[in-house]
Every structure is written in C-alpha cells, then in structure tokens.
Length: 164
Image 1 (spheres, rainbow, N blue to C red):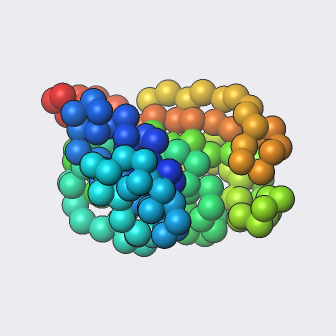
Image 2: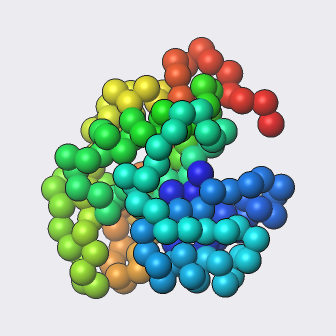
C-alpha cells in the first residue's frame, strides 16, 4: 500500500523491485502524474477513508500523507492501516514534528505531532514501533521543517515479519 502516493515515486521503486504496489492518492492531479510517470503502477483516486479490508497488504508506505489529516481522525486511519496489513506486516510513516495544526504557504493543512504522541497512536492501533529517526528537510512550500519517520509492525514485538 502506497497511501498518499503523490507523483508515484515510491510506487515506482516498489514496482521496479518486483512488488505490486497499490498506489492511492486523494488528488486527481497526483494520480494522473503518477500514472504518467510510472504507467505500470495503476494509481487511483482514494482517500484515507477508502482504506478498508483485512490483511490485504504485506507493507504500507505512508510518507508525509497522514499529516494532511485532522488530528481527531488519526486513530481511525491508523487502525484501518493496521487492519489492512497482514499479521507481521510492516509500515513506514513520516510526519512533521510539532503540535497543533496550520496551513502552509500554499494552503495545505498540516497536522503536527510529536514522535511520542504518534508512537502512542501506533501502539493503540495495534502497530509496534520498531525504529524512529528524526531530521529536518525543505518541503514543497519552501520551509525547512523538522520531521520524524517511524517503522512499525502489525502485532506484538515478538512477531516475525512476513516472508519476503
């Protein structure tokens, strides 16, 4: 699952590595761009609310997309992602660090969370955090912002990841 696939870069890498990405984005423009850049990925329009089903994916890539969701919806979305993963499935999340919510210079909503808050939300959703990295980077709006990336597994820490 590439949730919030944007221009399809991650799905393009997944496809080239022999995987079958399910590339979803809420923006028709991003879906069109993704499909133009990587014709084989078959990106389609879907929102966070469209992630349904049980044990569909071995892994989920959710990089800088959930940060556009309202804070109150994060537990529900994380629960849906956890449910959509197979037991032992892996997920990668990246979020901007901070508190509160704001619009950036180009009008996009950002929900900021701290790593501690986000890892607690992951645990409540049934995802076990495995590793966390913090950094800062210039985003599309031009500002340099702190962020964190965390990898998690569906289920308790003792579960093994799915076979590759």
